[in-house]
Image (spheres, helix red, strand yellow):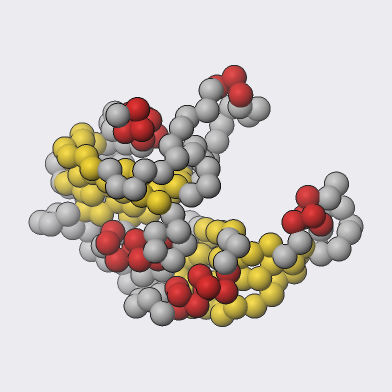
Length: 203
């Protein structure tokens, strides 16, 4: 019950956007809010919530390939005001997932349900102002890039390769193995694996 309450507190939707209808939990993920006294800065980026066409299809990438765990899965009634999408009173499925951290770095997904499903936007294969890039660091970049490439509607823009970035202190470059892709809804991802954490952490 504690885990459900903490998940509800993290939604940022319930007070003004939605009313919970049904709740189900899946595999128990580590969900815990830190004490305010332990936080060095006042603000965290808690979660990115993706509006998607089909959560079950999207889970094939974010859960099955990238390894995020579902910690919350419910149907909510949307106001259409605080989160200005869809018609007031529409029902939407909301899923929350986390990985190593119990508080930050979460992914949420919202899918408006029939008969008020949102129309899919046309895919352009290009990015511009207002778009975002999600960067996922992994210890299994080859495995995950290969698996993602096999999923339907995933568009790989650059297959597995090496990227180099200038260091913060004039030392050796930061080297990551990467692949880049659009997911089935047009969100852009970089999956990378840091090759030398010691150099990355050097002052």
